[in-house]
Image 1: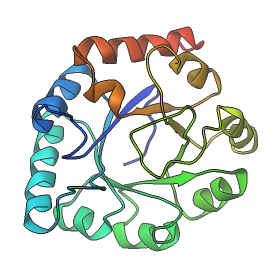
Image 2: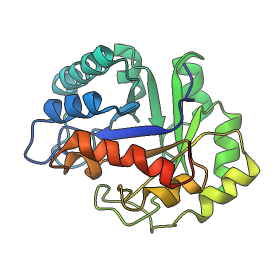
Image 3: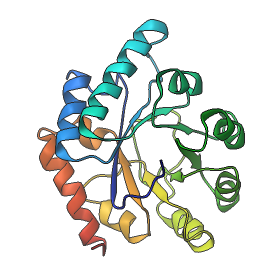
Length: 217
C-alpha cells in the first residue's frame, strides 16, 4: 500500500481530541464525509494505554475498514503491527524510519514528520511513502509544536524531491488551505478543523474545494 491518492484529506484524532463529542461518532462522520486517511494519534494528558488503547484502536480500525479508508497509527509500531494497521507515522524523535520499514514490511504505509530538506532526504532513502511537514500555521492541537514555518520549507522539499508526497499539517482550515495546496502538497492533515466543526461533512467538502482554489483539478 502506498500514499498516492491526491488530493488527500488526512484526518488525525485521538480519544482526547474530539472535545465533548464521542470520538467514534466524529470519526464516522469524517469517514462518511470523504476523508482519505485516518491517523490515530493517542498522546498527551489522559491518553489511553494498554487494553483501553487496544480496544479504542480496534474500533477505529473497524470503522475505517467499513469505509475503505487507510488506518494509520502514530508512533506506536508494536500496536500497529499487532492489529495489522495499514500504516505507521513516526516523528524525528521516534525509531529510525529504516528500522520501522523493516519491522512493518514493504506493503504498509510509512509516514515521517520532517522539518528540512535533509530530513526529507533521509526519510525518503529510509523508505517513507510520504513526509508530513509543519506546523504551517499556528496550532493548539499539539502542545510541543514548533514555530509556524509557512509553506517555505514545503517548497524547498518539493523542489528537491518532486516525486515525494508531502502532507502539510498545522493550523490548516478551509480558509487557508488553498495556499498549502498551491505549494505542491499531496494532502493536508487536519485535527481541529474537523473535530470542532459543527457540520463535519460540510467542513470536509470545503477542504476538498480548497484544492481547486489552490490550482488543483
